[in-house]
Image (cartoon, rainbow, N blue to C red):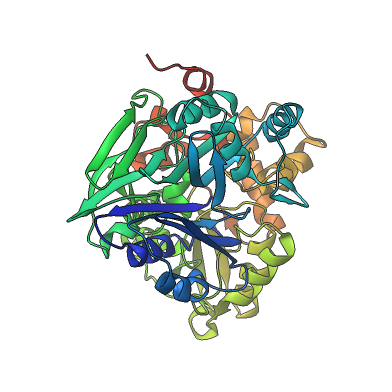
Length: 477
């Protein structure tokens, strides 16, 4: 998931843009970018795979000028993309995943439209979105036509001379939030960006909603779909920053509730210590400790904020290196203890086994009980860049061992009350070499988030997106 931010002010807003974008640094790992309008559009893009956004863009933020701008921390492609369209120049940042990208690229190529931002993985996703939008009569019409063509998810922010446009994807998978303060309006993915910049939340955009921010305020360009929301549940479990809220529900509070539910499932084990895998596992562990009345201790600590998330980089080699180097075990806390380890999820399982569990055993833990805060991941995400194949997933590897081959119908392994589900948990525990694994149930995860189940995207766990066809084929009246 890429982090996006946009701002319009009655005076220069370079510093607001710089800090607002930087508050999304926990999301993307590859590129950072900023664009501003001051008589014309200027932009800067830097590779941040080996550095932080702040260090790369600090000097740029001093030089760039303008009263409106957009910024991005990108998970994959270079952004922002600049395009001089028939309805004027614009700069765009996006977040999401386009399932039918190859089909859309081929369609544009047949029309004689070329792509300039091409890497080893193919055309730049944001450039594709920009060129689809440019096919419209105007910018809003272009966004609508783009939404109608794509499969997957795309939320975006666009900079023009008239202001900053924001559009949330039709399923509302990725949040976009509007805020204001004296003389300034902003749009953000993470509400954390508003807290220290003194913005007040005005509204959460509806799925499919399009708005314009200018010096006069907020202008509705297209109403959204009130009955289509399928916001990503993983935002609360792992992706989102602890201080952020989505639909008015704080991330840290949800994670604490997840931990409480995990502890309620554990009446049959005796433990000495609760710990969380930094950073996102910490709040889950806090909740577990509060409910179980067992002490929370830092058996694992993260070495400096410079090490990012091991889940988000695109290459396995980079993920493994980060996982190995960022966590340090404290033997004096671990030795001789029966430990519950709270983790946000088990995705592939290899990092947990090789770079977390091994450190705990090496420090002479007596027992290790792993408690993921979400259910077993069964399907690759269709809406954001994460796991890209079923074969990667720890749960699927366990199912393959139990069944002797890959199977299409995994409903028994989704049902936490079934014997096959319990066998899967035991096999995963054996595979990652821990005493036990016990997953969060879907019902408890939904209860911890606090939204109706039908408003949450649970595709990673169930393989179902109940509103997909209904909401991606809708037309505005």
